Image (cartoon, rainbow, N blue to C red):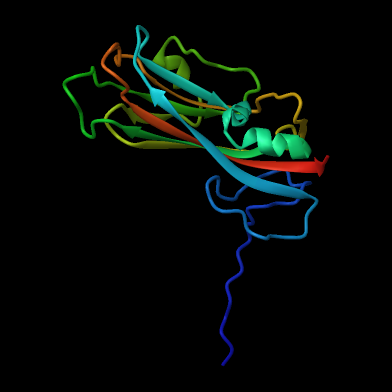
Length: 196
């Protein structure tokens, strides 16, 4: 009896005409369908520190230009778009530490081209439909994925613009000078086309 093979409806290298992305942000690029575009995965790490307004960090889809691989791909291709962004927060002290002021807060993903950060109250950040609880002593993951015609447009690699933001705010995480609360691994699935 022939072996059954499972086909996935998702590919990590969607067609350049795709409007919505449902693939993984951090998976290896598969061969997918014949395509005039290439999808790559890149990332950078950022310290999450407290301050006078607490711990408030945010990342825009445009931040893929901060990744080490950006210069290599932007030199090879004319245009790009961010298919997805994922921020994984890892605390330095799991379940708490007395060296910093631990705090509850919120994480949020937006599809705004305008940066909504910094927030000034939890009630404002709570108005977003994608808000989730966030604790400085617990790991957290938040994901943004391309989901509209506007977000699916390619941008010249010579310029950049953000299609969305993810971020965290823990207002009572006001410890300063005590090191980072933890680190954020910021990962992107980026599609390039138009080989130069």
